[in-house]
Length: 84
Image 1 (cartoon, rainbow, N blue to C red):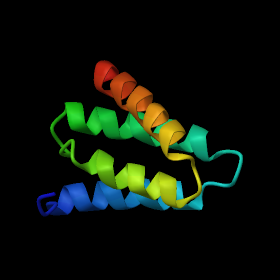
Image 2: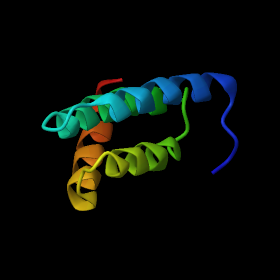
Image 3: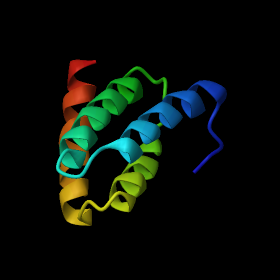
Image 4: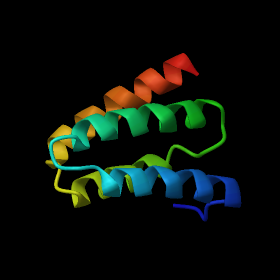
């Protein structure tokens, strides 16, 4: 992944902090909401698509199952990009 610019870094840092602080039982919902937000940023060309890999790694790191996290991420991203 390329080096993030300052805006991308700040936006992604906030998203990752929220994902890391999500409580067990709410992590998948949080991932969906954050993926939606990230999808809007990507559609507006404020953040590069590659940032999704970082969010996915973070979600898996919180204990979400990889296949479930991938499906949730894809759904949230698609909705966010559509609604941007």
